[in-house]
Length: 384
Ligand code: LLP
Image (cartoon, rainbow, N blue to C red; front, top):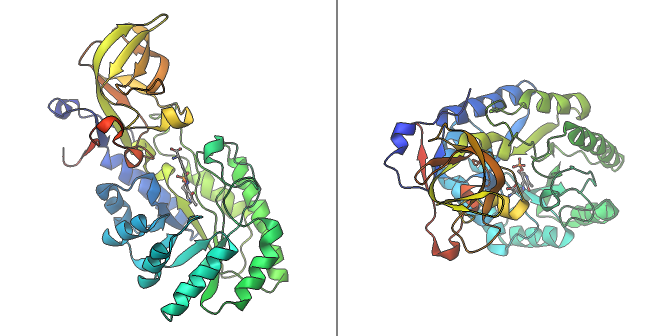
């Protein structure tokens, strides 16, 4: 299924705005549940990828759980109707009020990243007379071969418990009365396109599981995080990511113990291709080697190109003339406010509609008001 642009409906809408193809979103979600369901795997949607109400509602309606990284995300997920028993809460720096929020709502699990955090959760749970379920986030030291800003599973990263601390953590856990071990958790990074990185993760998890067994510890859940990448170059040829191969690989290489559940926290792959950022050309200006197409969307609306040098396919939906090269830039007072350099676009003029593709994940949710710009609005294929 491909992304569909209702060009007529766009005519009277003020740009820039996000637009979501809900049919494509639902087809993507069905593919995730179908493929994960084959093996009984459970998926928590990583809310950080897109916390828009309509998107969350569509995801909740399909029965996915929620993976949260802040009190705000926990609150939002519960408000959106995700059952608390399907909410997991991760993050290296959970504040006391955030932990209390999770405890008050009996969320399913805290993914814990250090001994001091474990002790605080125990202390806060004790005050409430509760026992918190926790999963230990282990740093597997596996290379995800992705951008260094979104690599999380190497020893040098701030995330997870490193192997040399594992014995201490397990000893500490044994002495705490108000936390109980529910599982072990991993996440090696995001936008991972080489599935072999996930195979490396499986092999590492198998090794670590053996260590747990040797300690007579049997975690009920293994959570391998998210990270499946999408194809930014060819959004139409690959509008639904290859979930089949992804889940199959885990089934093939990860050795679960009897009765153990395998959980995932997918974000980007579930929502990315269903969203675009729409903008219009304000001015064409001649540069030294190329033309500048100055559009009305900026890095405040979609920060990924400026922050990670990320590629997003850019299309001119209004012109079918000969291609020329354009630097597509926004109006913000920073040279990094650039969506693409030397982009081939059909001859472009003021007023043309420009689509910045694959913006459904880490797009709207990372928008900000730099330069006191307004936050972009969102529109949906089923209500436009
Ligand atoms: N679980 C944990 C613990 C995570 O840290 C993340 C993402 C996910 C799951 C979901 O990963 P995904 O399936 O979406 O790759 N803003 C960046 C991406 C940051 C990802 C942070 N963690 C970007 O725009 O590329």
